[in-house]
Length: 129
Image (cartoon, rainbow, N blue to C red; front, side):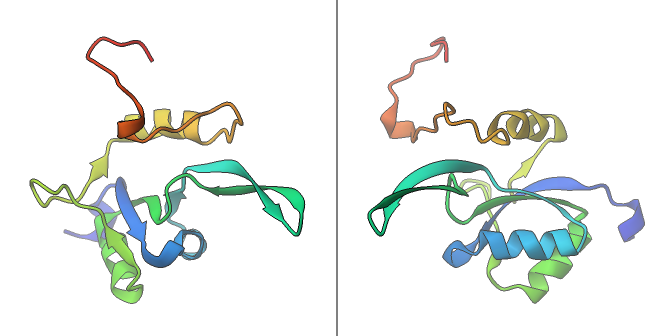
């Protein structure tokens, strides 16, 4: 498949050893789309409260590019890896509409936006969230 005939798709990827900021800079330099869900965290440094914007999930990033572009970058950057479905082994790809909705919420960096691990919630089908 020729690169100019490929369409850009969203890949869920990981940047090992917390190098997602490095990966984002590289992808932006290559004119590829990238999104890292971020949140503000308060930490204490030298006795003072410091508010910093940090990744919600370390190592996670979403890349928006043509498959051949992602393959090329991956061949140059060993720490950038596809996230695959454990059952099927297929690369995790997210539709444009789902990513647009996710970015609309997760891209606000709102202090009131809360993230939960699945084991932190006791939800059943039909529960309003």
